[in-house]
Image (tube, rainbow, N blue to C red):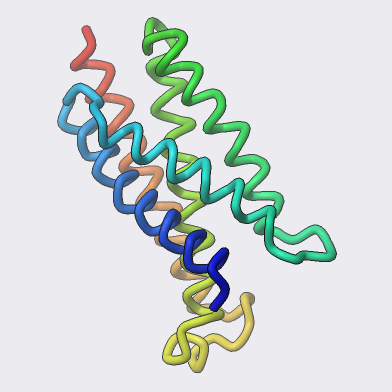
Length: 157
């Protein structure tokens, strides 16, 4: 494995772990602290480092990375410039949760590609088990996002 791959994967895993903890903070109506900065920085760096791989054509990962950077720019603006005032609080929750979902989505695909035990059950990205895991990640993130938006907003009032 190249150093770039190790750094990219480490940033991604830290971002995913921090992202879920931040979402649970929002669900609990807690104030966002340093863990939130870790989530944002590692998730942004995950997307950025993804562009340094020697890729010769447009891939779903590049598209997801590009969209994620835009979403994270909105999240950073909502948090640091707008201080989550008014509708910016909801904008932050939505963009942060979607960025988290994108990270998990890529984790699912890459896990089935790179982990031999998983790859044996799903040799292609179109395998039903991959799609089921992606759908599960989507449902989980939608549910967590709804609870986060409801509870984080209530905590701010």
